[in-house]
Amino acid sequence: MTAVSFSSAAYSVQWSGNSFSIFGFSPQPCAFSGTRMCSISTPPLPKKRAGIRSKNASNSDSEAEDLVRSLMSNFTDKQPLTSTLNKYVKILRTEHCFLLFEELGKTDKWFQCLEVFRWMQKQRWYIADNGVYSKLISVMGKQGKTRMAMWLFSEMRNSGCRPDTSVYNALISAHLHSRDKAKALYKALGYFEKMKGMERCQPNVVTYNILLRAFAQAKNVEQVNALFKDLDDSIITPDIFTFNGVMDAYGKSGMIREMELVLSKMKSNQIKPDVITFNLLIDAYGRKQEFDKMEQVFKSLMHSKEKATLPTFNSMIINYGKARAREKAEMVYQKMIQLGYKPSFITYESLIMVYGHCDCVSRAREIFNQVAETEKVKRTSTLNAMLEVYCMNSLPMEAHILFEDAHRLKIFPADLSTYKILYKAYTKAEMKELVDKLLEHMDSSGIIPNKKFFLDTLSSLGSLPPPEKKSVLKDVAVGKVLIRK
Image 1 (tube, rainbow, N blue to C red):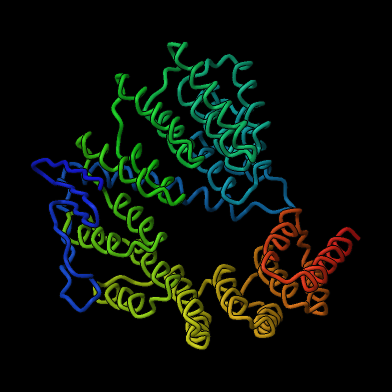
Image 2: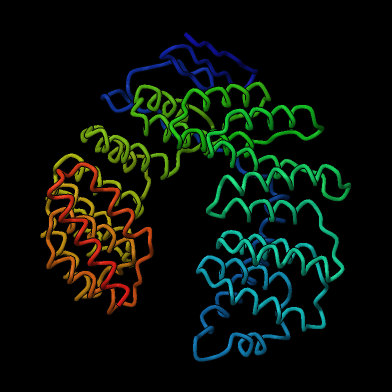
């Protein structure tokens, strides 16, 4: 039996067998078994001096954000982006362009980012700066445009800028977003070793955080341990993000023991858990259906100075739902409401999935209808959740009717993920007419399926008997031909 114990004056954590405690809070009955809940303690208010500075900074940030929102609303396909920028040429500066890079990157408009960059270079106030290149490399990386990120790196050097740590961190992150993870990790380690040999580019805690999380996601425990040893031997001090990143990656991979060892290491470094630590532990234990541990972490959170967030409750709701523990999921939701939290669209989608897993399709539909009637913003993910519920309960015709209504009334937007749910359900049920109709919908909506769209469908057919599987494979092949046409 593994036993880990460490403590300080402020908090303590013990892990032994089935016992888990944070902040010295020992295991108690389940938080949702009828026992009284502890109220959430609020953190102390910031000092006035810090508050004044924060207020001035937030006003400045707010003005910049308002300007960028105005710019984004004026960008259209009919009018060149540069002409809009020229209208604001007297007030636009580097900080506004940084925000523009962020907003354009969120909407996959990486080419427009380059247009803004070229426009910047023509302005009198522009000075070639590592920060600009670092930001652009980061945006390109998130979009999977690794070659473009490399081109920007070369462009930066040609402009006379000397790379620094932040630029290499952005470059490493850009590579780690590429599809070939093995190659990306190899290149990332190469840059890491190169940085060690350059005075201006010495790895910092951000460098280690990026690499540690990436190798934890790849389940490469040996390399994670090697990086931790390298970090321990250096003058760099790990921070809460170091440990949270690794624990989250291990937790999402189901590597609970490794996650707990990192938690132990975090405590030995005298770093207190924050709400993100609690949430990732709750989610990891919930995913593995280790509900005793999940509930004890939640109790520890409720007795700590940290404040639970909506993701805390959403995670517990959906994981109880997957285990078909409907009553416990409902108790979490009720407790959330009692504590004054307002449900988000993710909360409602989680509840829809809970009832779907528990064969309560009509209750799931009630929640979906409630969202449709009350929420101003209608999201694709909410429609997808209800469609998933119909499909997992072998009700493809009900899914078809809902999709047709949503398409006709234009209430909920649909994207490739919506069509993938329906395509898999229709092919599995051998409903060729609906498959053909769905492909026509996709064509008229300008949605072009990629290779993964069909491969995911094929991967879901493993449980079918050979005759049915052969028939479905034929329909998938027909689908590919129709799309090519």
